Image (cartoon, rainbow, N blue to C red; front, side, top):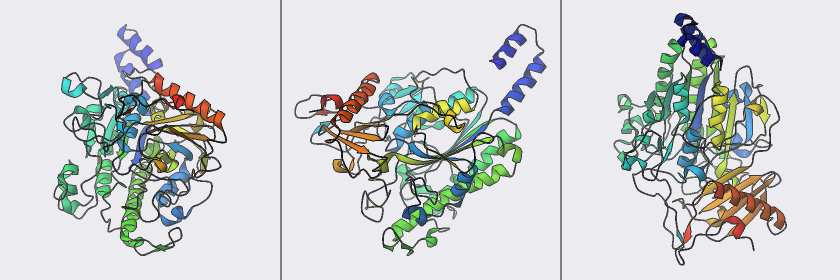
Length: 527
């Protein structure tokens, strides 16, 4: 409010404009910088940093010294959550909305095309498969099956931040404005487009331009034909982009959104030999080529984190005013057509299942925050965080209290947790009235579902069958013991709360092909 009052005084001739400019510059310089480091498809155990009670076999498999370094610098969150697939998470991050409200409930790609698997039982809702868009869009093409928003980077940009997007976007379908991060409030867009995966990580393959043009990474032509890995090229470009706001003493927001560790598992020759043929305690076998390439992707991502930390720390004044946030967009891939081991058991152990599933393996994420002068290094925080919570949190951290958005914000700021203050328990809701294309195994939590976590309990509702499953995730993080029959009152209360949350947001529901009727709400499915 002080900044606004100075502007009013100046407009009234009561404050010299030169003094006003000086005050504005000082206030901008005081605002913290941000590096939001988002990893694609990284499971909560795909790191040498333990995010569970104890170190796990998966923690011992991976080599991530820079994640360990960040954990020593800041606070590690052991209960961080996102949506189970990519676009819903990214749209919630940029909008502050729960997926049930923004309705981009599955991944996006081509204009006007759903990406769901076919079903003989369900008719899926007409969800927002064209993605989020800037709220300035008006044409019929750009307003069909979309959610217009005032994005997080737009609010930051409007408040003096230099905003940089680097890597995967996956906000909007091809040919829509939202496919280009430059329309979503970013001053710079490096390699972001509608594609949710890289055609290739290899510069020698022009990052997919040769072998897989539909998913080719755009904007990195100067690396075409070179022996360079995509993760490395993006890091070089991000560091180069940071030099402009740093030179101008302008606060910056870098959204470092890696394509790694999403498939295809191109071999990162810098690291793959560290894992190939190495005996693994969990698998009781040597790592195969696919798993070695996956681990190399993880280590390459970690090197990128380290390179960014080194760059910032080479300029102490910048480092001391830069907040680092580390997060993944969904659970790790858990299907053994691309990963080694027992499907839905080994890949995110001790959690069950993985990407696309309602179970913990699909939604629980590695998360860390370093806020100089605020967070205490080497600490652990059990406060629950959902992906939409970053929107209000980052704006509060930036000191931006007065802003308007065209959308309703569902996220809750977790700044008090960063300041070690106690805050209210955070209930979390997931909504996926869709069919992920890679598996429809409802027993493992895939298929169309909604879920809620409250206290120690996780309730999962399967739309096709009307089944309600209940797990005590504090005692049973692997969700092996369905206790719904033992706690009917808990099931009822949570089903009512979940249904109320979804109704309040006018959430979409599938319907049955045979009858044309909508699937019942969770509270209507209770026997």
